[in-house]
Structure formats: structure tokens, C-alpha cells
Image (tube, rainbow, N blue to C red; front, side):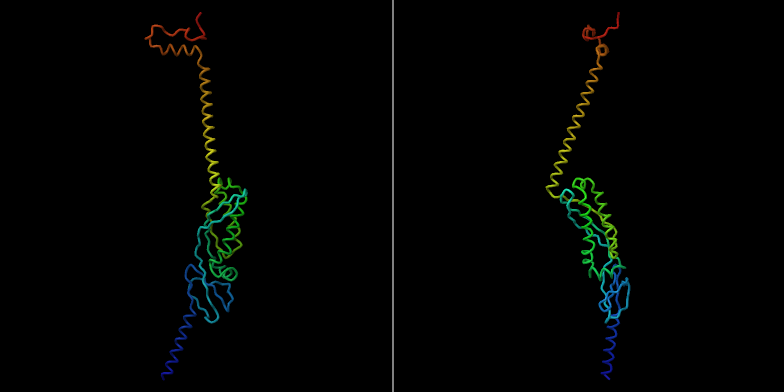
Amino acid sequence: MKLVFSTIGAIVIILCFALFSSVVTINSGEVGILSKFGVVQPEPLRPGVHLIVPAATSVSRLSTQLIAEPEEFTSLTSDSQRVTITATPAFSIDPTGAPEAYANVGRSVTAIVSRTVQPVLLAAVKQVVSQYDINYIIEHQQEVAADISQVVTENLKTKPFIRFERIDVTGFVLDPQVQEAIEKKQIAKQELERKQTELQTAALEAQRLTVIDKALTANILMKEAIDKWNGESLIPPTAQQFPGLISTSK
């Protein structure tokens, strides 16, 4: 009798173990990759509870949450100057294409990103940066960032398992020597502009004084002197004080 109960107990335990092994839960923010006898199945397991055959199938998981981490990419400009660009791509693993990525690219999100997204980003940075010289990149950073974003977007269209949203280019860093040379050039340019402004101001002032000097004829000076005479002096202004005065009296 004891043997019968022991056998039944063992069977129940085995059945419970098989039952629990047959139940797989996929959480929100991830997707399940189902493999049958080692072959990845094309249909992903969506979040929820799924029944599988333990002896014949296995389930792996990939995160489908948004990835947005800043990275640095270094490239050479058209005039052979080194520039480092900081960019933050925002993307995720597309659930529908996750089995393809798992089977053909990598068995983890890190492996998939390092083999697909990062090479595309680096290639885009090099392609765009190599088209411009260092001065253009410094003065048109927004335009360069927009070009990089456009190239990345186009190239990632060939990766259906990547759901790309955007890329934010947040910084351009130059070599210290190049940065110092540019700063000196800017300072010299500002100093030149200041001196040119001073020269223009001096030229305008000289022109103004010349116009005034030409306008102050003897008659005008005589009139101003008479207008200012307050009578304290016994001798009013006379024409002899202003040579060249044109007399209108006859």
C-alpha cells in the first residue's frame, strides 16, 4: 500500500513539474524567442502566459524597451582635422523582427546593438564629417547634426528588427591644439573688427568736422558772436574780427 502511495506521489510531482515547466511568462517590455529542437521560430512570444513543450522547446528573452545612451564617435574632417561627436541614439528592438535578430545577429540586445546600430552610427558620422572642413562644422553644427540624423535613419531602414526613433547630436569636441588655434583666430578677428570700427568712427568724425568747418563762414561766425554778446564789453563784435566777412551794406 505504501508503495502505491509513493508511486502516486512521484507521478503527481512529475506532473506538477511538467506542468510548471510548460508554462512560460513573458513580461511587459520584453519578447520571447521560441526555439524548437534548436531552430528559432519566426513568430515571437508576446507579453503574457504561454504553454510550451519542455522537452522539445526553449524560450529566450530579449528586451524591447527604449535604449538611449550617449556615445562618442571620432572622425576626420575634409581638411584632416580630428573631431569627436557625442550623440545619443534612441531605438529599441522591434518585437516582430526580434526572432530574426536573435537567429542571425546576436543572442542578446548588447550583441545586436554592437553589430548593427553602432556600425551604422559610426559610418554615418564619418560620411557626413568627411564632407566638411573644421570651420564649417564649428559654424554649422545644427546642419551637420541634421545630416547625420538623416543618414542614420536611412541606413537603419535596412535593419527591420531595429525600431529607430531619433538621434540627438549633443557635442562637438576638437583636438586641444586645433581648439586653441581657432580661439586665437577668433580673438584676432574680434580685435581686427574693433580696430576697423574705431577707424570708421574716426573717419566719420573727421568728415563731420570738415562739414562743420566748411559751413562756418565769416557771416555765420559774426552772427553767432553778436547773438552771444551780452553788452558787458563796451566794444561789440565787428567785421574786423572776422576776415572774409561779406558786407551787405552799401
